[in-house]
Image (tube, rainbow, N blue to C red):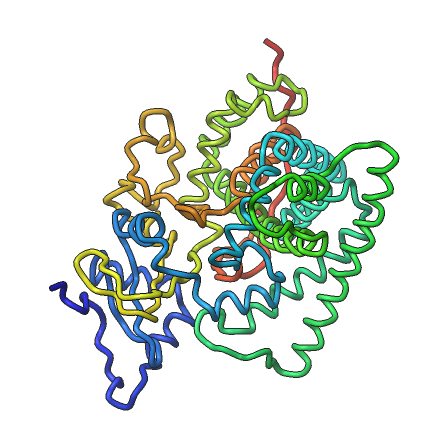
Amino acid sequence: MPTRYPPGPANLNFWCGFTWRHAWQQLAQPLSFATQLAANYGDLVFYRLFIYEAYQINHPDLIREVLVTKADKFQKQARQRELIERVAGPGILTAEGAEWIRKRRMMLPAFQAQIGQRMANAAVVESRTMTDGWTEGQEVDLYRTMTSLMIRTVGHSFFGHQTSAETESVARALHTLAECFLDTDYSLVRLSGWLPALNRRRQRAAEAAIAAYFAQANERRQSKAAASGDRDLLGLLLAAADGCDGAGPRMTEAEILAEARTMFFAGHHTAAACLTWTLHLLALHPHIQDRLLTEIGEVLENREPTIADVPRLRYTTQVLQESMRLYPPAWALFAREALEPVEIGGYTIPRGAWVFIYPWVIHRDARFFPDPLAFQPERFARGARETIPEGAYIPFGLGPHNCIGGRIAMTALQMALPAILQRFTLELAPGQPPIELQTAISLRPRRDVRMKVRATPPAPRS
């Protein structure tokens, strides 16, 4: 019979019915707390969060058990789902069971080559628009700039090109929702819709602004589509839902718009964080940036990148993959809740227990990534990538609930990064303090990251 509890920290005040110490550590310093648990107690750790039993998984084999082979014995943790739905709206990101199967079957056909092509085009166009406004020596706030870029890119792919006023309006609203997310304990506390009055008013105003943006953009999109016959991402999603037979009741336009809002909210956060960390790492490692610029020059020869260039932009892809290893935008996956007693790694996880998986921890494990704190894109070169165990590198999750838009997000990054570096590189501004991490919806800098832009010399023609 499997032993019930694996190793873990002492639950000092469990005698009075709950343990608040671990809950506070997980809330206040989640990255260091999760890292210490893995270092001190191994691959499967047990501890208590208030009255709940919690387990942390720190090995690829056990991660595959939870997310792949025994995925049907777990569901996404209810409190996290409720909070995400408050700020991003209901969608496939938080759906479970039959509802998740129905939505994924209907939406998956849309996430094919046409969507990738549209996202690639949008990323290049908006990167060009952004760099058109840069000048030699100008200082930019890296995270805010990349956030604005990805909001425009995702909006462009859904609705067509947006005006600056529209982009700024929705950017402010999305920033407010992210702040509301930060003001709430996103892993432990159930607020049942209650927030302090001022915070709640700000959230409702932001939600109204985003709803107005989607309504206006969709109305304009429909007019353009009727005139030109062109289908944007939202139109392709609607067509995919219409053409998916046998998957249950078709998704309504309102449901598709809700999915678009969820993807808009989650997608721009993830891609903006990845570009921020990638450009920051390149500024710290000029020899890697030089090699990357060489590849971009040889492959593109001063023309704009296209999706057809992706197979040849191998080092570009490796740089992005290594950036997401060191700074995974999804630093923690959705916590899972056991639906029934389930054996994992020789221990029985009881029904109702919470299971936590941290890409931040597994991506920095020296067993799978030697010299784990070093920035080494060669880890993902041909031959080396195949030696990484399945479950050790999970920037977009793993198994049936992996991110449906992961490949599309990667395409946008593979287009935006070379489009930026063709024109400008970035270096840290003088006096820039060390970057502190903020664990929000995505892993991002806590404060402004000031960077100076430097014009990139034109690539020599071969």
